[in-house]
Every structure is written in C-alpha cells, then in structure tokens.
Image (cartoon, rainbow, N blue to C red):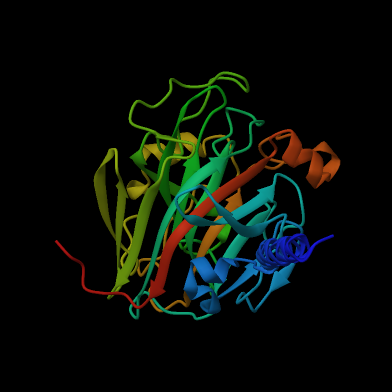
Length: 346
C-alpha cells in the first residue's frame, strides 16, 4: 500500500470521526432537551399568580393551605389548549364533601376575610368544559356547577352570591345566572335563594318531569365558550359585570347591607314557585342583610349534582367511573385576580 493511499484512508477516518462526534453531540442535546421537558411542571400558581391568597378543598376531601407549586392530577392541574395555559378544576358528583354540604368541590377558599363595608374584588376568565349529564330535570340544581361565590363566615353562614353555569342534556347552550341567598332573620330554616339570569335562564327554569327539559336558551353559553366575571364589593354594594366575546356585557348592582326581602310582601313570585313544595323558603331577611358580617370569596368548580337531591348517577362513589361516564363537573380558568374593592366604573 503506497503512502498516498494511506493518507487518503487516514483523512477519511478523521472526517468520519468528526461527523460521528457531531451527530453524537446532537443526539445528546436532543436527549437532554427531552429529559428536561419531562421534568418541567407548570403549576396552577404559574398560570394564576394569586394562589398564595387561597387554600383549597379537592373533590376527594384533600385540603391544602399552600397552593404555590401545588397540583393534583385528578382535580387541580394545568392544561394548554394550544393557545394558553388553563387551571383545571375537576370534581365528581360524589366524593368527600365539606361538613355543611352534600356537594363535592374543587374550589379555592380565600384566606382573608372582609365585611361588605370593607369590600373586596374577585375576577375570573373561564370556560366550563363539563357538567353532570345525569340528574332530575325538575330539580333546579341538576346539571349545575358554581364557578364563583361570596360566603359568609358568621351568623347563618349563608351565601350572598353564587355564580352558576347550567346546561341541560341534549342542549348545546347552557345558562349563566347568579343567586343571592338571604341572611335569614330568625330561624334559618326559612332561607331562600333569589336567582337572576345573565345569559340564558335563571335557577327557577326546570323541566316538567325528571326527563323533560325546557327549550334550549337562545342566548346561552356553550360548553367551552369563554366568558369573564367581575365581583366588586365597594362600601357595602356589590357590583357584578359579566362579559363574553359573543354576548352583550351585563351589569348588576345589589346592596349587601340593606335588604330587599325584609317582609313577607317582599318575597318574589319566583321564590314562592321554587320553594312551594319545600320546608325551607318561607322566611324573610334581616333588614341589614350581611352588614358587619365577615365574608370571603370562593372560586373553582362547586358541583351541584349529587345522588341525594338531584338523583345524579354516582357509580357507588367510584371517582374513576364517574369521570369515565360523565358524572362530574370541570371548569377551566386562565385569568383571575383578587384584591380590595374599588369605586365602580360607569
């Protein structure tokens, strides 16, 4: 073998080695990036940074006081829809409930308390992805999920605000409405909710029998359709604003320190209809409503479907089966804020 041939072989081996080394480095880099991507977790607190102001109760009864870098793959986690990250709140029809409720929830609970006179503000941008597909159409709370609340921590511990989404089976569009629960004067057995429609129906619209549904609301909100709400309590007055890209912006004003329901004559026809066959619902509210009482905000998915009152299917309480067969509520939030109340805008 001559010298020229030997040099050619050496050069070939040298460049082959160079190419192999480069490919090896690229492969290592790809492997490293792949490995890194597996270790990166986006937490709800990365998407909505006010999580340090909340604690949470999950649908299996788990509680957490520290939500920074906290998630749970079955109830409280992050998904990306191709455009944005969303915080997922998911809860079955049957699980572990709070002490005063038959309904499960994956829901935030504000740590700080305030009176209506002190005020506070809560906002949220969300889309409801699922509500229970089973229930009794004659029961107003069937097929519902509560997506925001004001809750009293004193007196009867009633709720001056519950924001709902409800969609009947076989309907494309659902309803958004809000309920005000009176701060009952005397025995709380007489408490009732008064409901106001935002888009679609209010709480009182039900079916004529357990499997008959009312007509689909023409101006309703579809599952997966984005909308926002703002709850602003300022100097005892609650200002509500609801916005959606394809709907008219709707605003409401409600006093939390002076009752509209202080006498029997003030009880609306809607209430008399909804509570006609129930033990509760015949009371009146104290004149000062919630004045001076400590309140707090809640936000997430408070599932209103349960086996006791709405006859919803729960598959023996098996959470995996409930998720598989539609017995759950799921709400996605991508934005929100929590802070002091502010003077209302026009």
